[in-house]
Length: 192
Image (cartoon, rainbow, N blue to C red):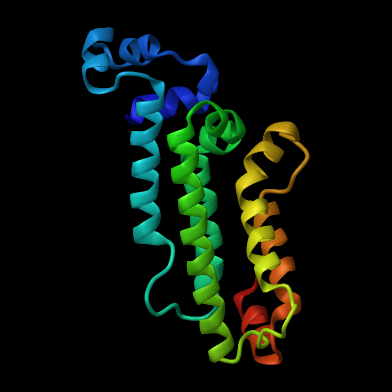
């Protein structure tokens, strides 16, 4: 459903019908309808592809320190450009398509757990401070998710007003207070 993703990116989910997707594909509406009964099923298929792409790129079993985190930020930004409609229209999509909403929540929980494991790895390697009771790591995970998820909407609202690496800077600024001296040295070596 690459053509559907392109149309959604260009025109928005609410503006694109199944007929419009069929037209873009150069096939009959009935042909698309045979495989996808409605827009929700098309979004489900796209979200499924998004999840598969994330599974392969997000969290390797042995990340190589903070350089991995920086590569991850860059990958996520590229991923979001490819699927910007999903992030720009997230509230509408989750409101109108409950199955996609449920799956997206599941994806959030999986990414949160993976991020928690990544930070544990950084703590074990002496790059981040050990978590102190009430230190805010769960809030940090959630805030990072919000920055990433809603940056597409922010760019839509301020198309000319944000620097190119705005999200990257925001995420690093959130993480920096949790880094140890060794973590800060590694960060400085990245040239971010």
